[in-house]
Image 1 (cartoon, rainbow, N blue to C red):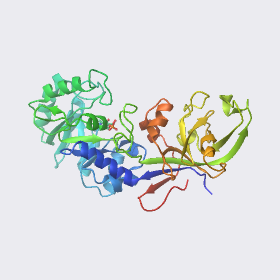
Image 2: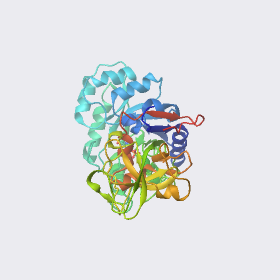
Image 3: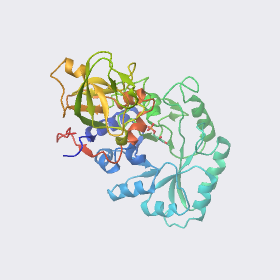
Image 4: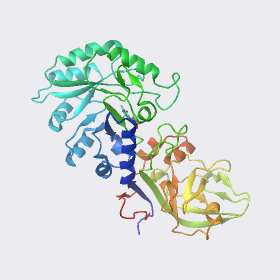
Length: 389
Ligand SMILES: Cc1ncc(COP(=O)(O)O)c(C=O)c1O
């Protein structure tokens, strides 16, 4: 029998979340952001659900190749553009649209020999200070691109640093929006500004005579079921469903007496007799080692669908959970009982990955992307039962 841990990808949830984003920006086209192997879910696994998007946005040429191999003929956007001149040959061959964020990428385009002019997304740095042309340099970059026979259509793109919060002013995006609107106002071309947070929180707002959601929105984390602005909002507040369940089983049960400790470093001490379960999941599976398991604070888990908590330190292959809440309402737990680390229990309960991430001092993006290679995956198509970790 294989080790009883399983990551399950829920296609119905992906479809639902995609629709949820569409409802937030009904007049826009929707990129499904699928970088980092679809945020750890697996491009091939999510494809049957996400092919309902208008395009895919990602970073790696190899991931773009995988989408074309799945027979995706629609738009693919390289969010960071090309990393060297010869990548443009792959763009021509696979018909990839690409971001242009620096002069060097324009130089490469100018020297590129192609019969098929490229569609490019000119990136403006409106305040994130990661990639893109400054407002002052935007116009001349646009003029350079516009003069190139290698370039077909020029769209404009920028990225918000604080769409998930109210940092940087009253709503998190006003300063970048102003910078973009004034620098780009009389440049033609389609626009793409919003990530998940901006789409859910601000899509209806005005951008010049149009809307902030403009022509294309770039949905990432919300498609995978996490609230982009957790903890201000929970995934349920945005009607998002978990697209990944990481589940395992108990492989041992221990009866502790008052004063007994748990795991490496003895960071948890039982204050009274209690039962704990040992779960086949550890940091080598991608579960965060720094998730808390002290007396004061334990990362949430679902044991047989009942919410409980971690006790002690996460080790490489195992972690320990308090069995008290599950046993309070049912028979004693035993080896083989289901433990959900995040996602949906077969008993119906949901543990949002956001809550585990928050407890561990990180964000859902990191946990989802970090599920280890040794963890087997299953795909839930909504019909066949797959909760068999
Ligand atoms: C340029 C760009 N657009 C869109 C996204 C999607 O963001 P999110 O996953 O927060 O929706 C990302 C992700 O980091 C990004 O880098």
